[in-house]
Amino acid sequence: MARDEELKERWKLVVEKLSNQFADGDVLDLDAIIYLIGVQELGQFDRKYKKDQKLDLMHIAICKLLAPYGYYEFEFVDEDGWPHYKTKEELPHLKAGEQSVLMKEAIVNYFVETEYIN
Image (cartoon, rainbow, N blue to C red; front, side):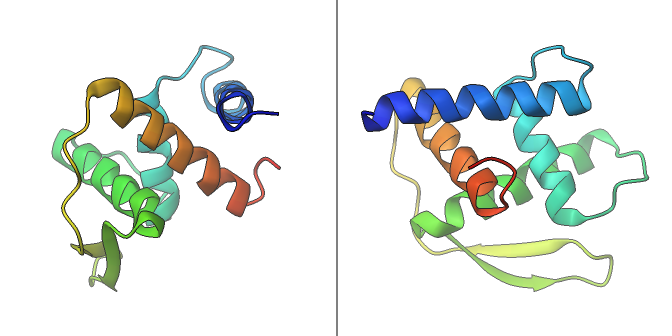
């Protein structure tokens, strides 16, 4: 199977599983999945988040997802349990479609590594 086709199939599987688990089958979009990864990485599941905290959760997820690509590096966890990353390399300027493919690939890799999908 071509790499692009494999990514499409695995992305579809991730969206389907997460949508069924967290959205009663309503299809989750890319931002919602990034948010869920941020909550997973923070590990504080039973609480409500304010708008700025939700953005911080998405930032945590993006850092975690792009760390294997060399863009971010984990630094420390603060006293409130929030992980912090430092920028290792600036992200290249990508077109919207290229950004989407990069994030989908990183998300699929994340869920393969966590054995959520194979």
